[in-house]
Image (tube, rainbow, N blue to C red; front, side, top):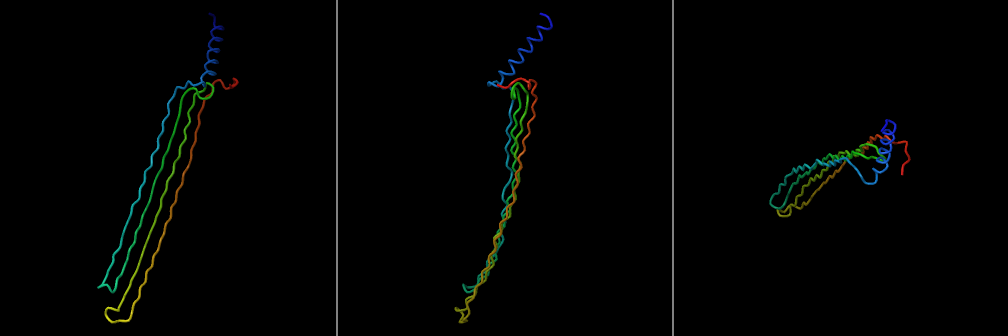
Length: 154
């Protein structure tokens, strides 16, 4: 077999392999990584003072801090990618979140009727705060080498 015939045979085999590859043959690997790190840290501070059922004082505060980091990466690499090429795709989601919530209550009350004092008063104040910030970024990367890109696609 001369050099010219060998070159035509190799070219014909490469052409057939590149067009037949997408029919279901795939040699490669894929990796999926999905992780969430986060949690909530609660704080509870407060006290209640009562005197013989005629007076009380209340101080109560609940704080909560919520945080999180999310990472999701999927990648796939192999042959054939398209029509006879070698390539890799990476798709990722990266994000974070942080939040703060607060519930606070102050109160006082007095009832003087058990002691013969004609005075009854009470006051109750409540404050609520809730704020949450989050961000998510999507990243896609595709790297492909198509050696037979000039041939028609089927």
